[in-house]
Each structure stands twice: as C-alpha cells, then as structure tokens.
Length: 334
Image (tube, one colour):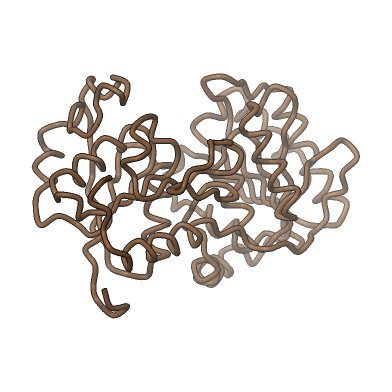
C-alpha cells in the first residue's frame, strides 16, 4: 500500500468513556479519516470471551446494523467487551481487516494483529503485543494549545501560579474517604496560599456527596482565589483548560486515564495516592510515571512546585504500529 492511499478505519466505541478516549486517541494519532461505530450491548455481553469468541454475542440489534461491508482495513477497539466484535469483523473480511485491541482482550490473543497494553499490566510478551507507558488518550500538544487559547481569558482573574486539583473518587474496590478529601484539598489550599496563587478544582461522579460538600466548604473558607467545576454543573467543562493552563496539577490516583492525561500536560504533575485509594495495578502505573519523570508522588513532605517533564503520548506509539500493519501483507492465518 502506498503511504498516500486512503485506508478505511473503524473505531469501535462502546458505552465506557475511558475505552472510547483510548481508541479514538489512537485513531486521531494516525492523522487519517476514521469512522466511529457506536456499540451498545445486551446482558449477554457479561459472558466470558472464551464463549463469545469471534462473534456478535451480546451486541444489540441497532449496533449490529452498523457492522456491515465494506469491511475496514483497520479496526481499533478498547476493552474486553469489544474484542469479540473486532475478531468477528476480521472473520467477515476473510482476514483483510487488521485489528488493534487496546488493553487485554481476555481470550483469542493470537487472533489480533496488535494488542496494546500498559506496561504495568505485565502481560506475557508476544510478537503481536506492544507495551506502552500508560493509557492512550486525546491530550496532544496541539489540543492543549487550542484549549489554552480558549480558556485563557476565562481564567484571567486567577493569579499564578495556578494549581489544578483533579479529583476522581471511589471505585468498585477502593474508597475515597472524607479524610482523604480533607487532606487533599488542605494540601492544595496551603500550596496556593503560600505563593499567592490560585486553585482550579474539578470533581467527578465518583467523588461522592460528602466529600464534595467538604471540598466546597474548605474552598469557600480558604481565602484563596479559586475556580470550581462540579461534575453536575451544566456549564462547559473546563477540564482541558485546567490541563493546558495549570502550573501544577494534583491528580488522585484512582484513575489511569486521569493520571496519564495529566502527564501529557505541561504543568508539574503530583499524584495523590494514599493507602487504600489505588489498587496494585494502578500503583505500578504510578511507579512507571515516576521513573519516566512524568510525575512525582504527593508525599507528606512534598513541596508542590512547577517542574518540566516529557509529554506522555502512548497513543502515538500504538498508531505507529498500526501504520506498520497497514503497510504489510495480511496474515491470513490469524
């Protein structure tokens, strides 16, 4: 295939925003047109992938109607539930469609042309596996420049340095407690107050009402200039503006996506990871980010100061491998 040839690229986008951002991030890094195929599920999607295999089991009728020829040259998908769909597409195309799966497919690994997994997942090495330093995302240098221009006048009244506090919350296995919320917001307030700076604070659906109320109260009584975006707010979300314009970013450790997106931004990144908030896999990710110079741990004696670091861009590594796939002969045996 010529480098100038246009490829038909599909992105399987299911109902999980984190999965979509990873798959779309890789597609955008290809710098080629792509088609987003929205996928919704039935209860059968809960079946393990060794049963679903290369099939549309668990895919609803409306989504099935979107999965028709002409079959793509490349399929990009993320998460366990999309993996059988990608395999089915390759089967329908008689091996023409290359399939790139982000994160563990949980079965049928040999069927995939490329599996991109974060190094902290410690998956056994295979010829079709590429290890990446964290999760792919859509926070590029170009997007940050655009967002900075968009939000700069909006945050003009907030004195520098600006400290962004990006707060996740509880997960299925970990709990973000009021004590954690108290410690986190107190550290941020003290840091901003000590240098006459300001705060950019955002919460999430998982933060929890009690923790949110505590954060709001502490900010209101802090005497520090701040901007707060509650996840329930109907205002435009300034999240990317925070990433683009903060001198320091403090991010909770519960979300791989949040940590990796922060590590793409220019501000110095500190990860708040108290005991009980991050699982073992996440802890391995944090260590990789520390070792790569992308972030620092927020410890009791850590001074929150700006620092320079490389921009974490794992989507580009995956996109490069996808381009190599598109330029190579198809493997009919997979």
